[in-house]
Each structure stands twice: as C-alpha cells, then as structure tokens.
Length: 134
Ligand SMILES: [Zn+2]
Ligand SMILES: [Zn+2]
Image 1 (cartoon, protein in one colour):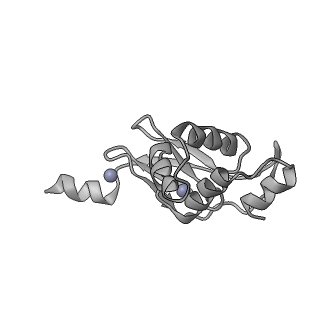
Image 2: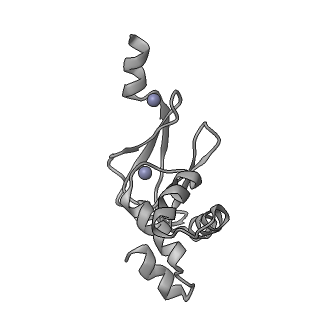
C-alpha cells in the first residue's frame, strides 16, 4: 500500500501540497532537507510556503510515513523509502547514501511487531576518501 492510500484510509486530508511533497520525496533518493523539498515542490505548487512544507513533513514523519534522518550538518533529511535499506552517513561531506544491505525479513521479535528497520552507519564516503588522497 502506498503512502497516499494509507493517508486516505485514516481519513486525514491529502491536500495538494501534501501530495506534491510526497510525489517529490518518492521520486528522489537524495534525502533532501526541507529547504530542498520546498524549492522543488514550489515548481508544482507555486503558492506553497516553507512553513507548510515543515508542517507537512512533521505530519508525515510523526505518522511514520517518511523517515527523518539527522546528519552531522544538524539538518533534518527526509526519505519516503522507508523499507529495505540502511543509511550510510559521510562524516566529511554529510551526504546520506542508501546502503543496499540484506535487511532482516523478520517482522516479529520478542519485543513486538517490527514495522521498519533502519540502521545508520557513520563513515567517510568513497568520494571523500578519493579527495583526501590527492
Ligand atoms: Zn563524503
Ligand atoms: Zn534512504
């Protein structure tokens, strides 16, 4: 079930703004910040404000529809692809990369039902490693 269907089922309103934010987030794998989301969604919905973007991101995140990842740049990054991948965060350039790891298929554990599984790995990305060698 996609996020929009889920939201419709709860009876919450899927506003044009909310839909545009989701469309954008689902189309990228770059873990954008609220500012980047705002700039891109504004192309589709010119009258959207940054405050509306923040409010919608808060809503989507607090309901578990999207992930909020804090990088060392102290900014929140958002990801609508919440299943099946871990994150690798470069401590040098703060890029957040998707790590295609073998995520556990177990949906249950002794503590309850697992809904999603996110691990974070901190390190230095290949791009920065190459730059440092020069
Ligand atoms: Zn890097
Ligand atoms: Zn991701």
